[in-house]
Amino acid sequence: MARVVMVASLFVLALAAQPVGLEGHDDDVRAAGVALPPAADDAGAEDPGADDAVAALDELADLAAADAEDEADDAPVVSARFTPADTLAAIAPASPRARCIVTREVGGGGNGYPPFDPNTISRTRDHGAAQLNERGLLPDFYVRGYTNPYDPFQAVAYLEGALQRGLARHWAVVIAGLC
Image (cartoon, rainbow, N blue to C red; front, side, top):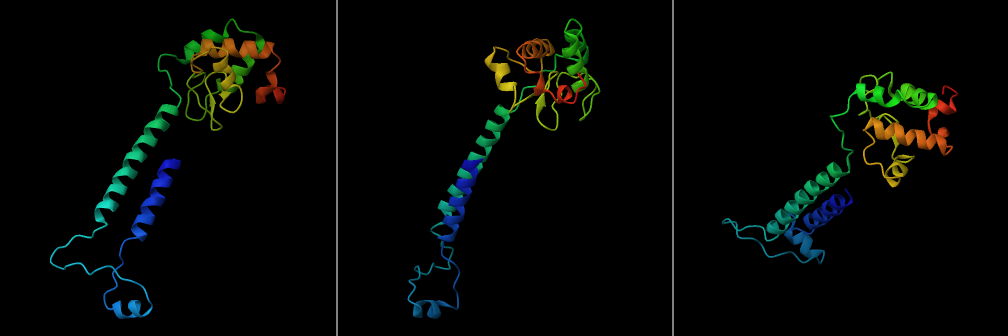
């Protein structure tokens, strides 16, 4: 996104450097000591800076497309192979606290997702059955070798380990005393 803004800024600067139509004001401008570009032939002469402006627009479009691809690459990959039934199967052998957390976090559905949907992403960007946040435990999830927060079996296994490591207070339902 920063590249697009930078290129857009360069494009605006390129446009600002283009000659401005001063028809009827040439004498006033010359009297002020400003040098005017040579007059273009009205018989179809092209603006000398038009090619630069078109090139800048093309570069801007290319960078915007590249940024869109980068953002798409950064977006979480939601696996369609896991279902709410998988979440229920994953929490069945889990500890009571892990079952409580998953049930409270995704068991009621919400935010457009059905109950126990392992593909749930909350409004605060919490992912999967264990609702791991990008600014919270999701990086630790990856560091510990897990690969897919939308796989309820991985999510619940990670949740169990996090609870054993004393990280229960990372879930609001624990802080609220609900689990």
